[in-house]
Amino acid sequence: MNLVELPNDLFLLIVAYLSPRDLILCRRVSRQFCSAFREDELNRHALLKHFPRARELRGASVDGWAELFSKVASRYHYLRAGKPRGIEKIAVAKSWLAPEWSSYYPIGQWQRELAFEGKRARFHYAETLWTYDDGYLVYPSASLKCYVVHDLESGTRHEIDIESKGKIVRRLRLKSQVLIVEWSEREAYHQLNETEEVHRHFATAYDIQHDLEDGKIRATFRYLVNPTLISY
Image (cartoon, rainbow, N blue to C red; front, side):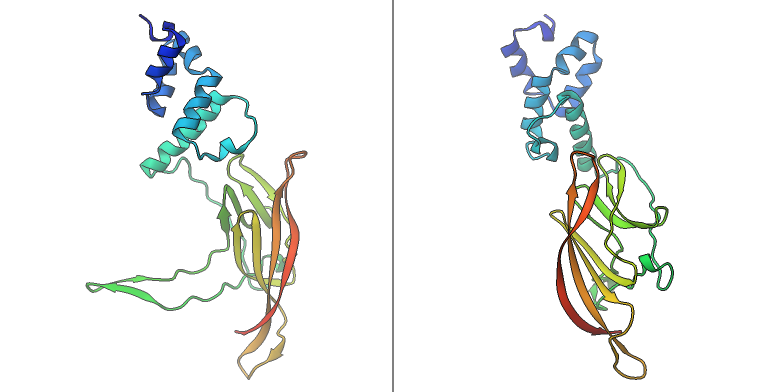
């Protein structure tokens, strides 16, 4: 007897033993198999069973469970295999003097190393001029000439205004849709000695909000941390 012609309760009992990869491959057997294994309720149960913590399940309602299950299964397949689904090179803008909007001077790292059996490895790596969390990548875009939020899921880029002109960005941090920008004033607060200057440092927080009406992502000012004096 054809598998898909079995009573629905027996069909679901058998399907429960199939892996996500097998569930998708079964769609290629025939048109009848494709119709049965693309059924929305089947794919919804499979998604809840195999990937209960997938971020796609956070929505109250989702259309197209078959396509969603394929996308999530593909992502976790590459994660288990340790292989990238795709590689994209991004040009990041950074400068010291010009243009002013992309001024960047990273926070220095401690010169610490790990040593074992005559081999050495750096313990601290240099700061990066980008930050990532929960599918959002924030960085200064050389092509758009501004800071952007790159939605990796949809592939769209959204310009955000963090008022970087006239500032020197020291570090970016993104967590739980809160962007922290550590920056210093371009002009020195006072001269410490002949070679060192003291600059006032600040940290500004922004809420990264996704507007469901127009689909745009915006950075909304949240608060400003009081200045700290640092010399360099």
